[in-house]
Image (cartoon, rainbow over all chains, first blue to last red):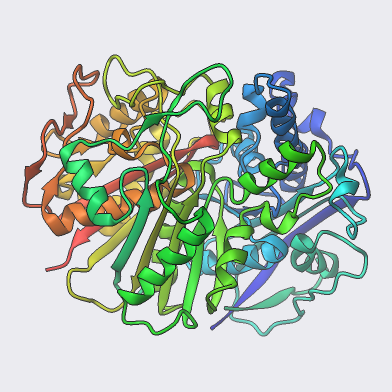
Length: 213
Length: 368
């Protein structure tokens, strides 16, 4: 079965080490909230602000979860120290999109997909299936892999921080662009399907993709 | 879109601290026999009550074994026309812990054994599926997986869906919930005034969802999703109420049609008060309520799937289980089940709530 999706909005951001321009101070004025945000949460909040989101249903995803929180927890356990409660609550895979929902007051359905290297492809598939209900769906993928000693585990990814957001709806029109899975610039494989779409997006044209299920 | 198919749970299997088969699980729930025990392996200075699987097989071997049981008990000869949907909160975290605690560095951590996808990687060494997807929304992971499975079958996109709710116990979850001050050193007491926390537990729970009716199958009638948009760990009753109402709307039934609610009922102060208030605001006292977590513990990402199996067996056996360990009821305006009883049961609701205010309610129905 194929479902065609129109890309209504697209945004992406990435850096080899540390994305800095996320407007977090403006987007999250309350310092007490801002200080609790993980990097993935900051990226998701920034991306959402770029695609004119209005409390749509969200399909979010990441392949590795909140690695910085995970690393902090493992260090605490190894040192026989108490785990930080805030770090633990920030360690679940749906952390970033949960902060986004709190900030935007979004009480809609919010899913978190984690499918390894095909995470963003599966976000597109899940988003397409949800969009059959007729509403506009926000799709977000983030990775924040810039943690201490990442070089011990990572030998192939150059861009350690990446985020992509798309707003989509079902379309009956023919596809105008392909879902390209090539990853020549060494981004996390988990983001490339959505990243390539966002990079190809042209807001003065129709942007229709075909999702094969 | 116009939906066409009905969705049925045609076979299921589970392994948890409460039993190595569904039959053992349901018997122990009805008899109030808990699988929770004190365990010092996960803390150097306390003795939390937790639930671990008792088996000669490893966790990964049990995972494969559970899939084989599904295949044997189904009308399928393989999974090549089946969508695999996994729900898990920690995936292969135990592998990363073992490597890091042994070496004190990450050089030998196998990334493909760390994340949620590691579960699918394991299974795909043994079985071939049409496609796969994993959801990780903490303690609603496998409830959301069932909801998604219901949607894709209802929309006629796939023919068969295998749901796997999977979480193994690890230092991260035991230590993390301990840090939050919500782990009990005793078997949990959901909805009791004297409750003092939850029991972290592990489980593998598998359900085959199909659009064909089979003997003794149970219908998945509806799903309701919502977000609290309130707090990372403190629940808001409006969120859970919203999920329950959406599930009823999806199933096209009223609150009065629900005979029993298998509550999320973790035994924490915050969850149980909030959930009881939400149930009270929607349902009359005709609807019975209980939590089965005093028997199974809180199996985290597997909870939605194992409680779907329990809900299925409640309908198949026309039996509502007792609330084990409930003595001093906090909210007397909901009808908490105080004994295992034979009843006429048409519809059961199962609630799952999670960190980040992620809520999912499922409705299951008797097939007549």
